[in-house]
Every structure is written in structure tokens, then in C-alpha cells.
Length: 189
Ligand SMILES: O=P(O)(O)OC[C@H]1O[C@H](OP(=O)(O)OP(=O)(O)O)[C@H](O)[C@@H]1O
Ligand code: HPA
Ligand SMILES: [Mg+2]
Image 1 (tube, rainbow, N blue to C red):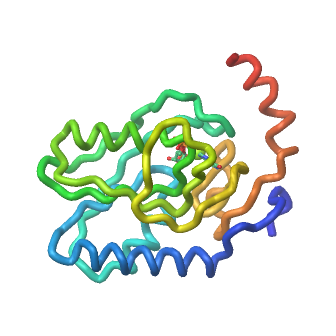
Image 2 (cartoon, rainbow, N blue to C red; image 1 turned 135 degrees about the horizontal axis):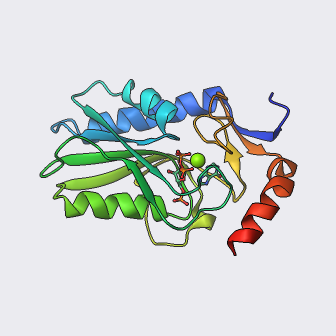
């Protein structure tokens, strides 16, 4: 295990089982449609790949790159659209693939954007749902795991762009970010 990880929450096998369960469910629920899988960069990259290959059905794939954590452990509260998707979503069924829904701000921003552009339907499949972190009211339609209120990394999730490559999800040792971030966070208040 990586030395900066306090505890593994979801193993490689746990995650593969969740991807299988949700991928199969999505394929069944959208059997008579061709939805767009919208992968949210960068965190959802591994989750998107694993879910989509469990779907034996017609799907399209697109990406959107939004950010609000800028590498840290606290949401900046403002969403930056770094790269927009390229598909015209008017009249289309969208499945947003997220690694985590925490405050809910990122998801709310994307749902509003897609509805504004005329999407026929928008659903969300997230590996992790941190319900205790919510500050805006959004719900996740397909949930891998309800995650406790701790800062987690791995399997796409980062701290300062690191740890995305770990194949599992674990709690980051607080000492990794407490000293370094206290100066930055205080200066933003
Ligand atoms: O519910 P929220 O509080 O909005 O947090 C969830 C979002 O935050 C993370 O993205 P981040 O801004 O870190 O960008 P990244 O995916 O490129 O790491 C994560 O991947 C989600 O997209
Ligand atoms: O717990 C988290 N870890 C990494 N990125 C995140 N973005 C929102 N919550 C988290
Ligand atoms: Mg991040």
C-alpha cells in the first residue's frame, strides 16, 4: 500500500464489482436508447473506462473537464469549465460519470448546463457519494459506495494531482495536507 494512505476503503475488487453492477444496470435501463456517457475529467477517467466496458449496449462517449478543488482538499466554491464537451446534447439522454459527489456543486453546475442546452434527460452514476459533504441539493441516481466524510484519493481522485494512479480508493493521511494546506487555506479566508 502507498505510504501516504491511512486506510484502504475500496479495493480493486470492490471497485470492479461496483463497475459491473452499475454498468449492467445502465445497459438494461437504457436498452432502447443511445445515451451519451459524459466522463468528468480528470477524476472520473478510470471509473468511466470500467463502467463503459460493462455495458453491452449502444453508447456514445464524450468528456467535460471541470474543476473546483484546484488540487486541494477544499472546494473553491466556484466551478471552472476547462474543456467543454463536443457533442450537441439537445434531445439526447446523458449519463454523467463522476468519481465523487461531495458538496454537489460540480454536479449541479453540469446538470444545469446540460438542461440549458436542451438535453432530454440527465442521470448521474458516481463511484462515490459523500452525502455528508453536501452544500447544494443534488441526488446521485447510481451510486457505487456511500463514502464517509474524509478526504479520499486513488482510482482517479487526487490531492495536488497525485495518487490518481492508485488502483484502490483510500483515506489520505491528514498529515500530508494539514501542514502544507493550512497556510493556503488561511490566506483564502
Ligand atoms: O461535489 P464537489 O464538491 O463539487 O466535488 C466533486 C468534484 O470534485 C472533484 O473534481 P476536482 O475539482 O478535484 O477536479 P479533478 O477531477 O480534475 O481532480 C471530483 O472529481 C468531482 O468532479
Ligand atoms: O474526498 C475527495 N478526494 C478527492 N477529490 C475530491 N473532490 C471532492 N471530494 C474529494
Ligand atoms: Mg481533484
